[in-house]
Image (cartoon, rainbow, N blue to C red; front, side, top):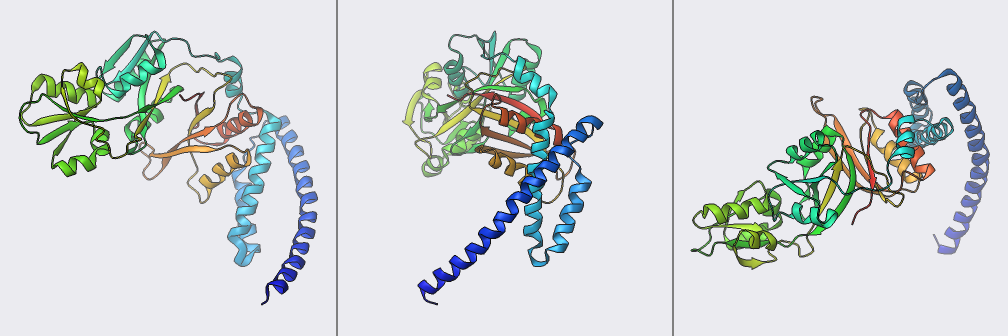
Length: 377
């Protein structure tokens, strides 16, 4: 077919599509008017917005009626019903406790009474804590879970924890604890990671100790040098171990700060696989702080174990023009192959449309928690 002939045919078909769309839009607006009437009835009767059986019946009907286009028709109706639910939630102003939190939470993060980090002095968590809170007192605990326990028991304390590395990915143990405790995230900072190979300077090195993430981030160097990797609780704790115990033929992978703190000799610098290696740290708190200029929101939730349920949720962020920056799935405790989801996106809870979406998800989704709205340095 000649290009000119193809263009003519496409033009004719597009005119038909435009005519169909011209009929669809008034029907869509009529449907939205019906949605508003439904919302009013549900308000007066105290009925929930979500009617899963009703939606299932509509999707089954669309699938049967559309023949070969059944799955596409179901996706279309699913999106339409999602828009209708969002409209109802907006009119009903659901999510009362979240709306109260948005109104009453303090708008700035005060200097904490204490900052709790996993590891020892000289760790990258220590560097993140100093970047975030300057001269605030810092306590160190051996395990990630003890950070959460400390925050749970000490009013006014916050915790600083690594959640993601640009080379090695998510720190899954921390995400599991976030989903277990459901504390608020009130801040975040990105810390540039430059790993060094450090030792006492006595004899050749055959073994290297560090946190699993540190070992993973330096895997190429370790392989090239023929070193045996040994996992340790923390990069700085590994440095302290080498300095104090002086195990034969053993070096630590740690920061320059840790090497200086524990008196180790730096044998090699910048040994990480990626030169722009960065770790993201978050601040956790039992109290929510919601600054007006916060730019990132974190949520967690589970979803019904049905086809398309996650896609349906994620489409609602796109419909509101919100950019998803992170999604993490973790096994739900004691639930077999079911999952909780952790989600980051850019936005402000103080924006009415964003608040309406979060409140709608709060009312609809199982195990939903709003984890915070904060800025990331």
